[in-house]
Length: 447
Image (cartoon, rainbow, N blue to C red; front, side, top):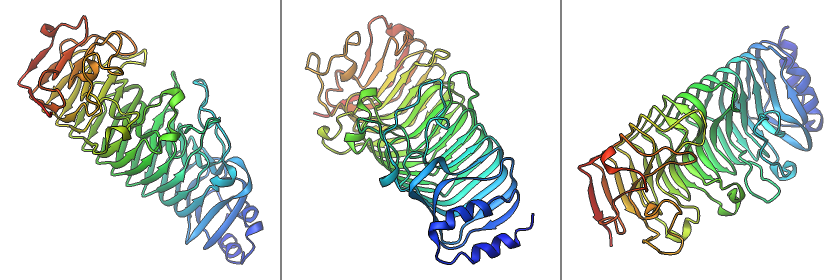
């Protein structure tokens, strides 16, 4: 199919935005080649589906904005199934969230997000060799970008702002950012900017039993004012999270999904995640956790920094700095290296450890326990885990399932904070100090 008529028709659109969406849908029937979109605003009222199995197709804007009409209806503004060699770049997409957002609950565990949510900005299902770059996406009523079961995916230099939906109670419903689900392989999300996202900003997810998301990189992205997680790595193998920055994670507080106890996290983990690395990331002001390692094993967490400087009252969902857990039934926390991290200003403790053969080395845990928890103080006692909220490092008996800390090395960490002189390192009932190596740690009280 020659593209010359396509280009001429685009240039003749003039000022007919009411009909331009229908024209665009017709013009984007090209299965390959280059489509250059005209400048200006293109208002669309229904989903534009690129041809299934399109290949070697480049779509480039030139000051082009796709805007969802107030009566828009569709799973996504732009979608493609089983595309190969698709390049989408230099385009603005406005999701018209003010008119289109409606309450949406998080899908049941047996359903995908792609099959549940509508009003997505860009939806790519299957395919390989997918490249998305230099996009600006704003006011999305649900996800900005959702990629499912694809291979060789690159999302680079994309800005997403003021996006995401809510449930019937006005809490975030996880949406707003960039989601890879159902076993995306060989992928990169890099140098993107995400601001004012209601739910998770960048994340991977797969249903239990689906393929994992593998061989991925989340690098050099920036995050600001995120209502859930800045980054979540879920059901994945071989993922590198590096050199990302962010601030104000867990704001606005009123949108936190309190009913699901979805504590905001700078870098979160879910499901079974192995052979992955979280390195050289820096976050400031987190109403939640710095790094959650629920499902993480056989990997490394190195040289990350989280800093809080506000009043303790400003962190109603403040937690430990770094926490291990084992919610996924097919894993246990083991063989994790936690080295050279800085946690400065945690509401409670610094690092919670369970499982075996983990190494916690040369970390700086500073200004801990800004809540000033003490033994017996109301709100500072966790049933079955005495001393948990008053300790700098706590070796626990388990998380969602039993996993007593044993065979771990806790060495050369600096631990400072309120009452840390006497509550530096503590053990849960049943955890034997002799079964762990704890040496060379420096403890200091900030009174």
